[in-house]
Image 1 (tube, rainbow, N blue to C red):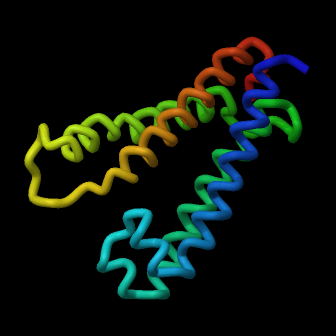
Image 2: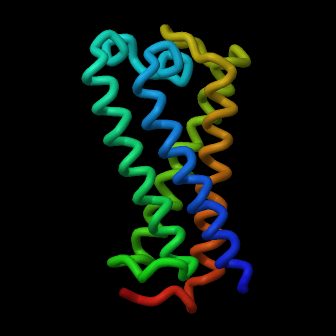
Length: 146
């Protein structure tokens, strides 16, 4: 098994686990608040559940694309382009750790609080994006153009 296949399989499974957790999170307003859901969303249980499930579906599709890129399921449409987009989506979102860290350390003064755990969450998302990118670049020649 080539390294890029292991990398994409790993990040695909990890992403699907995150999707399942995100979907389950919608059933607990307390957990949703902990992970940064807005108060307005948490006050409406149905909206919270629906939004968390929709986001979980999108994240699960990301995971399926990684598993497809690893060759474990049939090639999905536009696989190279989508894997590249997923990589950059996670990387751009993860780069929020920079302003979050600056706020937590007191270098930036803002009108809203940022919990230190958000910096950790953003770093995790950045790492996932880098893993997606590493697997995508590593398998660029082997991933089928679909």
